[in-house]
Length: 336
Image (cartoon, rainbow, N blue to C red; front, side):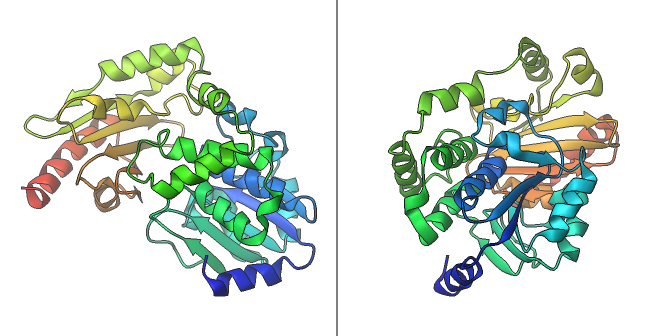
């Protein structure tokens, strides 16, 4: 955070504010952890509310303060009234208003000061104050820096737990290339605040239902390799979800299994969403293969160099066929 932004933020919070914290739709650990960390940081001197565009995985209910998160889809009138009364809106872990789904128009119409904190590339120009750095491991690491710039002494176990959870989730337990020596230092400082490292790992990775194990098995069984290319892909059909009582968050991490195969540089997961009329796509890669560029060019997506998302309005079969054609052409043009 540069000096000009710090001055603006310090001035803004020199008096009591009505703060609204908004994560992206279907918030993950980084998005929700960021919101909850700022909730605990600001709540003693301000009116603070967290409004999620929709539901999130119940796995994250262990985060301190999660019971205070409002779901816009469940309580629209209450949430809209809160947003209309807010004088500061934080958008966390996204940099395009479309990622807030039905909340996007409310944010854009609001007279509140809007602050973006995000670590994805190519931020849109919607916020009054933009704090963006795609080289950071996570939005939670950025929130840690934000808090330290204002008043580091307020950090307690609750704030530390929320931030650590987001960092460890977005870095793959400090395995991904976005992990830096600073990231590890921040993690160490958070542990000094009493973060229970073992408990967080257990909650994030060993806290699923048996049906998820069966879903994982069928997803792995569905993996296909594109002949002559270091690329694999798999899918979860609408029927797979029904048979295995699919819940939000159940497919988290499935796409990464493709990268465990020797010489594979790109792994893709297609999830059929018949109720929404689309296919959700997760792209993962390693090495020099940048999936964000491919996702943006062919599947209305984007994200990080090695972790991106996209969508398709075609059928699952047609989407897979298009993907094979597109990625074959893309690799032949850019990596030969």
